[in-house]
Image (cartoon, rainbow, N blue to C red; front, side):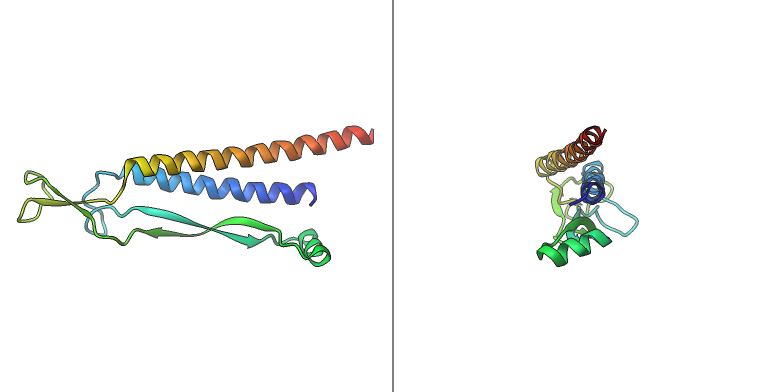
Length: 145
């Protein structure tokens, strides 16, 4: 794998994890949102990340020569949770139904925080991979002098 291919793979991972962190942040910001423009409480969102072939000339040659599959991470979709909202008894809330229950988003604070930590660690791992590739390229240039 050449220098630019490794950079493309790591940068696709950075982009995917950034989108994941943005989505988790949106979930956390709307943990108490009971009314949205679409109607009803906020629906938790999740990012779908898929491994897609890396399209470049070198990748095609390498794949043909070694039978390997060089892939990059791409966000293919952002899906909404389709489960029913949690019903919480709050009779004084403006969005309460006749029985005094309010539909709340199905967002678990602890799960979202664990997901955020995981996305952050994945982002950091991609930054480390980029820095390692850069360091190896600089050392190779130094050897050539």
